[in-house]
Length: 161
Image 1 (tube, rainbow, N blue to C red):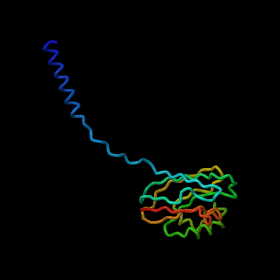
Image 2 (cartoon, rainbow, N blue to C red):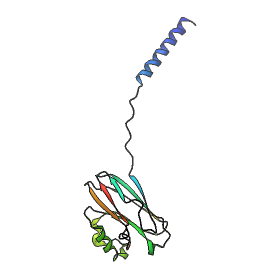
Image 3 (cartoon, one colour):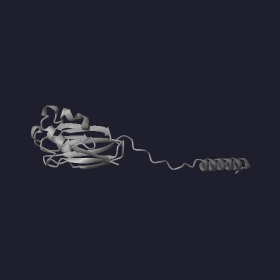
Image 4 (cartoon, one colour):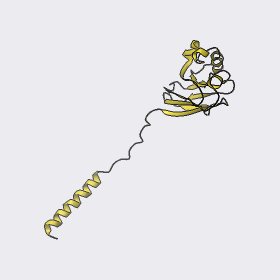
């Protein structure tokens, strides 16, 4: 090997080590989750939600999907999902909903209490809603407003903390 080749090889090796040493990278910070957190609710002929408790951070974006996994007709066993303001009386809302069939069991007089909702679904139908959790910590009730479903236990709570 000639002296020229040895010098050239030495320069190439030196530059390689220099570049490798300078290209050290800091570990990447964990990427913030993109998009809303999705919660998949199901409801069936047993008049129960599969989820009855949600914990959320103030202002967290949530995407709720509700699938009616039942087989009975919508007129007999429809299901919806309604999230109410903290302090709302979910049972009173459910009682008022019985008289609001033409409004999809969502009483217009109580619309100011609703934060988010999914309309009544028939068997094998899916509905969805995306919203931001309230910024005020507290307990926010949700329910199915179809007649007698609240009374059968079809309700839960979103807790913002």
